[in-house]
Structures are given as C-alpha cells and as structure tokens.
Image (cartoon, rainbow, N blue to C red):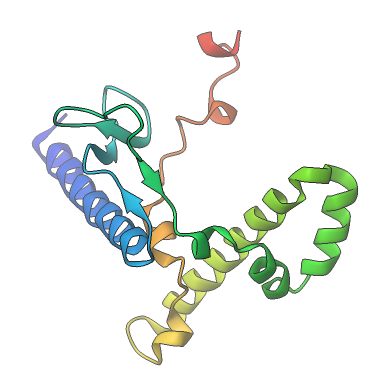
Length: 163
C-alpha cells in the first residue's frame, strides 16, 4: 500500500479503537464486564472482521469473558413498544418464527433505533438537547464495523467454505 493508504488505515484503526473503548466503557458502566484477558480489535490479516482475542497469559478455565448488562439485553418490551409496528411485528413473528420472534423484533428495533439516531445526529449535529440526538445504544452502533465482507452472505458463490 502507498504511504497515503497506510496513513488512512492507521486513522481508521485509531477511530475503531476509540469506538471499541467507548463500547467497553458503556458495558462496564452499565454493570457488565469484559475480561482483562481479552482485547477486542479488528482481526487484520489474521481474521476477517472484529473479534475478541486472548492477550497476556490468556484465559483461565471458567473465567468470565464478557457479560452484557441485563438491562441492555432485555430490550424486547422496549423494542415492541418503540416500533410503530411493534405489536403487528410481534404477532407476525410469533406465527412465522415461533421461539425466534424475539430476535426478529430485536433486529428490527436495532435497525430502526440506529436509523433514528443517525437521522437525529444529521439533523442536530452537536447542537440541541442530548435527548434529541442520542440513544442509549449509540456506543454499540458506533462500534459496529462498516466492512461486512467477512459475512458468509457476502462471499462469492465459489468461496471454499461455502462448498
């Protein structure tokens, strides 16, 4: 890569580090934990996408690696109430997906809430009341990778792992 490309990659890595650190701080400030024996980072050439990697002396048997705050996991009632179509989605999802209905509602909520958050940020920028610009899930959204090429759905049909 050219010198300019290397600088761009370093800047992108620093921005990712800041976003991941914000997510880790959010998890911890809401009662969750992330083990000091792991580091969350982009895999680079080792592994496609972002992941958790053992560091230092590694993980000990039975060590808690990560715990997401219970309040952050229990978004089902919030999701159903927040979505303008939440009740309809719930009844349809229960008919179509049974036990997986909650995952569909959660996915729809995260997409909807994330889109609203992005629209608020675009409309208000850093001005206006914080409540109009933010969602409690912003650290999660901002930590998501924009590169989705590691997802099997985006692999070419002749990819070795799809055969």
